[in-house]
Image (cartoon, rainbow, N blue to C red):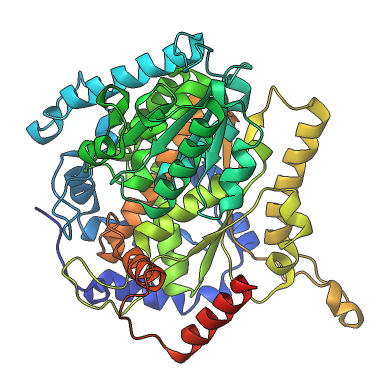
Length: 531
């Protein structure tokens, strides 16, 4: 396996980048456009229905070429191939990472490690198709022989964010069919508010949990089951057509009471935050139809090909990864904003936040050694134009360096022509204003815009299932590339375990040494709850 554990700072090209960064304060983006012929065209890339402009960055041709040289020096392409070929790149769990196999062109040549997965992948895909079509057509019936009108996906993290985001983004493709609802938070108001508006006779609960041990998910599932049983005056509803389980642990789902025929599986080599392409995507297939769900996979597959076959200088995920690496490790940028100018993409920043921060929020190398340099940045964002009236003040006149991804579909058939034009003009104006700035007299310095603020712009032809799949895959591959650059494991998440363990211990009053602050807070909580 080609993954190595070397300290990336020992790479000579890292030192070259440090030297270049010492003069970065002298870079003026507007001057780069004047000195570099056809900069906008040179520093842009296209794949299928997505256009990526990265010309408004604090990056000279020399810096870009040095970043590309760094990528070559760490054998980035070979390490990318390791993932696609089914090598166990998740070293801490000794697992392959094969979410890309879920959408692969099976007629192409693949390693045995990948090809051996296709039978199981096809079996699960067929079940998604059958389940979704039966539910959408009305053939799938509840206990009172009524067709399903509403589904409730109960999950958290990757079992929730992906399907929730996709269903909101692709609402226009639902065609007035089955309504989709999502419950994730263990806060009981989440599940209560959701089911209070539903008819139990026509509601299907989808319990999505990789391990089928997730506390939040199982607590909410039991509340939903109790609601169904009380409302329908029955017992054992877990084994009826009102409940479907999606998991990588079939035994636990059966133990929970779900009948085997109502369980969809996905494999351990599919990470939770990459599971939207697996059976976890059932709620999407129900909501927008299996054919549209398949188009999402097609869009992602096209980006997989782009990622593996396109030269790095025009490779969208690679360039995005290298730009982020430059700001994060050499210009001391601590965060990165994702701002979609599309209300249907309002959940995309949260989705990318989990994808990126859970993957690359690491401080040890592949070999478990402490890392001496910065890894994943804080990812955050909101839709424009709302964000313009919230945090853009800081982006324009604050003291933080925050690179931005502006994202927008050019056409939206479900919007109004004038609104869409104003929306897109707002996005273009913001990226332009951030770059050009505006100088005011010293007597009105509070009106001064320093400008020279970097951003990328991603234009999508239209917000279709295929293009959404492509967009998601771009960010997946950017995340992988940065993980390789930093020499970390992007596919485990041990940082979430301690909090889970302490939560259980606190709830069960186990023999746990509690600090003074937590003891005080626990005492106050107990006192208030007893009133």
